[in-house]
Length: 331
Length: 290
Image (cartoon, rainbow over all chains, first blue to last red; front, top):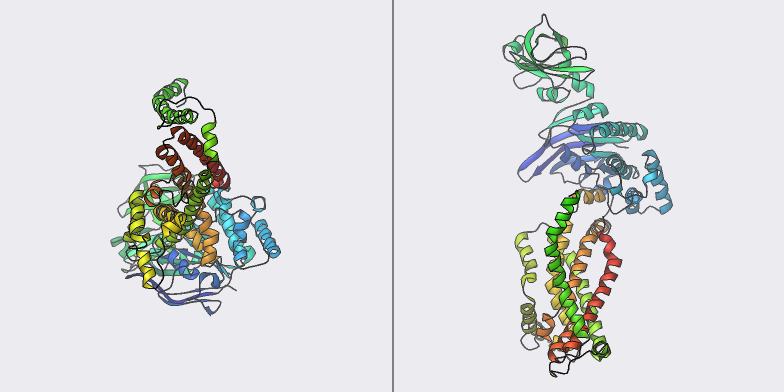
């Protein structure tokens, strides 16, 4: 019960077209992540689905029902905001119960739903506190609680983890994934962090300047990026791009190779270079190597033992080489 | 500011201003209390002397005292009611994106810059006047008898004048509070199924509670001392129908030349103002916490 279909949806603010006509299919129960650099229109797209912005054209179908003209509350969607948007003067219980109160549900049934949501989210001990007395992660859970009591057709998340510190973010990422497995409800998640996208998504939608660059599963995007933008955006550290004669050798305008697909040797290899900065993470070592083709990032093992100023030879794994034409499309 | 030396240095440094402020407050208050126990009538020089509680007795048993007390409460309460409710409504209107928003906002704030005597005169002569006033003109235009506001409804008329002056202040404070409301909260409420009225009552109004408290406290302080509007329009009349406590103190000291009695009235007014302040803080002071 959470099928969302966008047909030729477009959005313009005055003369500026932020989202050119766009088609997208979100299947029931899917975890879909919109990812892209800031200003790419991913939040706007989410707000269009939520109904917080009016579409300038096209149709949004939710469960087969045309919904582009419906007010937000009638679409059966719940949203978790970046700032959590909790009501500061209400207790956690009242916050979570607010949508039920607006739906005029009777008190006993509402209480049961709130208690149930609180149990799922480990909030039972905090129900009588105000949002101001909670930590960031707890506030986040209250916001999610307020969304799940409505039993919506789909959840919309607008960069929900960007206000949390790094450790908490990893935790909450896991909790949201677990929640998705438990509820099996459609979730649409907006982020600029490709790690979040890779770890959580069933399907990633990569956006740039309001256009969909590619739609696919995380590994599909990693293995077969359709163009240079997706190739550079997905994967960390970023893919290395080499242009000019070296690329022409492979019959392409430019070639791309991921840092983890380059062999490092101190004695022989295809490309010679000098180590600039080396970042030792224990499990891995990231080397920034200056070569005649520019700076190339390499991911080596933790025991690599190379330091700034060392001369190294790099050999790309040719089976993992990506080739792009002059328009940046993959060949 | 942690060492013993720096703390005592700090105390020494701020002491002149603290002492000056203390004297500034304490000397007039002390003199008022002193005069309130003296026979001090400007028409009877040389007949001074300590009279005990007589001044208080005569002031409190003055038939005008009770009327003045009620009038003061009516004025303060009425103006607070009009300004807070009107202020919230105006703030909601001004928060909408409209053409010429900047000019409209300046116009709304304008009455606050008009000095009380001037605005009272404008209301008295150009609006309320039963012969030349706009209200009389409008009444005559639809065939009604002009109404002499200041003679027949003096308290209401003065309350309206004072409320007109203070409405901009309330609107301004409430408007800034409204603008500080996180728009995501309103959007979240919208997603949660709250209609416009529910959003107003459940989200906006609680958010405005603190600003409204500030408006009420500050206005009460100033409204208790309303004077110019009464002097200019009705002179406390007809009879004593629009005499407030402040005006009664003025009548006592400067029209009846009884400085001692006026001082006693002043002390009574200070005590009553404090009682009002205590009640206010009890009722709405908790809004200011956290």
